[in-house]
Length: 149
Image 1 (tube, rainbow, N blue to C red):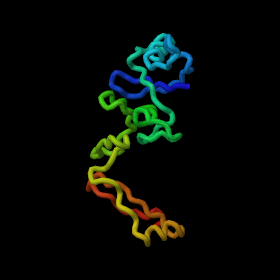
Image 2 (cartoon, rainbow, N blue to C red):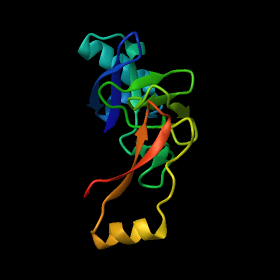
Image 3 (cartoon, rainbow, N blue to C red):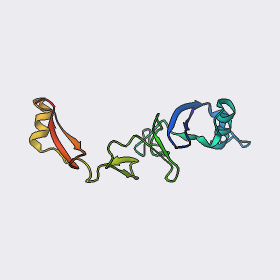
Image 4 (tube, rainbow, N blue to C red):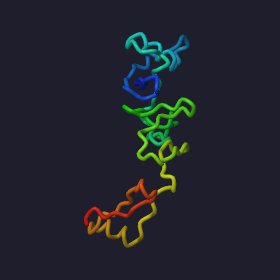
């Protein structure tokens, strides 16, 4: 099965549909996105250029079965289609976060959360604490929080 995202004129994913691969075959029996788009236009009354193929097996620019990643992420409702970079972006978690093209993810403006100290990791493993780093948008820092406190 092939998957296609139905997008709005503003590039917001409205729906994701599956399509039988046979409905995408050209005259040489090769699967072609444009054939799938034309089929979806005909059967769903939505313009062909607003149907974009997506890969169920792609997340954060990795193919979960070891294949070639396709368009950054599997499209989901309210994902954004970035036609310039050919990537589906999930919702931006914070206003300050920026696109990280290599992983097709959003990153904080100061980078990833810090690593836990060995003591914090030991406490998490023992179940005596549940340390996490939480993004503080107001101060633009990672806050260390203990959810068991």
